[in-house]
Length: 233
Image 1 (cartoon, one colour):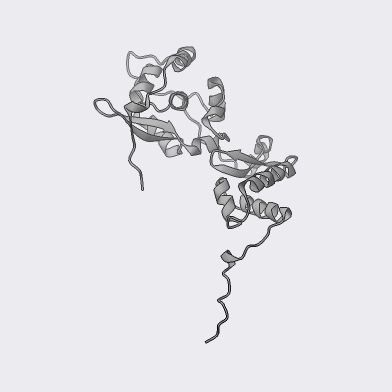
Image 2: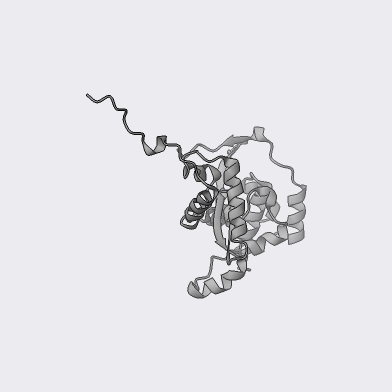
């Protein structure tokens, strides 16, 4: 029998990566994937042989490289991704003239309440809006992937608590909830359109100023009143 050692597997060979190599690999991965890639996922490209600090520096250089292009490298809640610049959208729409979904005022107001007051129950939303909330409104936002049930409030009936998702932040090109725009700017980001929404008889929805005042005056929900939603796994 031969005493020669077994050859090393590719994952066992330490390969030094030059900065141009790192940039080229990152660029290729980010240009060929549709979803944002987190730093941990990008590290997998190099089998852990490139530090997070070096990756971050390479991503910043890559962002600078594309600065004067029609697309840009951006960091959102889900990680890094390439996206077209807003001023390029008018030209892209000529290739794909399908209009993005536009949402009614009721859907927009419900999303705003969840985004700025999360986690909230359906009852909280109704109290702030001043009208009943249709199940279709919550379903629309859940189907869009912008909200999800994150737990239940520990009160009789144990109503579900709703919060925004990472997809919501990604779609608005935000890294965190702290970057949410002022309330009056959220409509433009989510393609608000003035569509009529059926209201309960005898009820009038809160005006913009009334809803803003309520959102600003409400106190955040205390953690002890929340039961986390069961894991999907």
